[in-house]
Length: 150
Figure 1 (tube, rainbow, N blue to C red):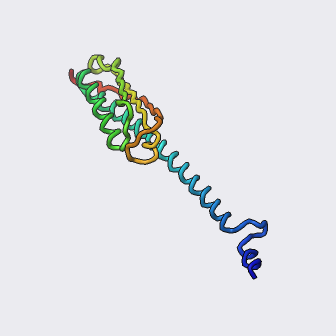
Figure 2: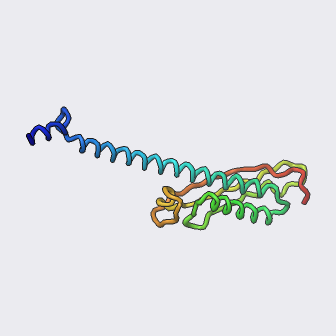
Figure 3: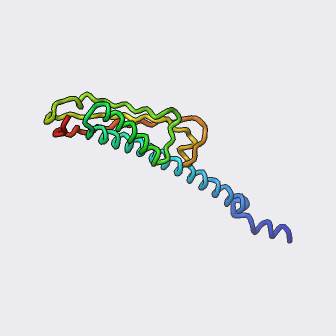
């Protein structure tokens, strides 16, 4: 009688059905974890790009070089914070103002590069944890308002 019960819970290959189900569940959970981290990496990369674009736009509409640098730094930091992106090192924001000092009416551009090292656990979950880091970087350019007044 006991042999019949054991025969009923095994499939044709002789493997227990519960072992097969357990292995399949583990594979699917691992797959979902990999998908989750991939999506979070993409979202973090897009957030750094958005921070660079916002900072470039903010700098391009300012009237002075000092105000443009301050605006770029402030806006980039705020954009990263709004997206729950915590940089391990202070976020590096470099502003290329070479096209900013042109006379009104002349075309110019402002480039902003935002670099951010994010701890590996922080990429997966929106909670600040310690761990190895991943570096994200993005450069965006915005045209300077040609008819601004100095």
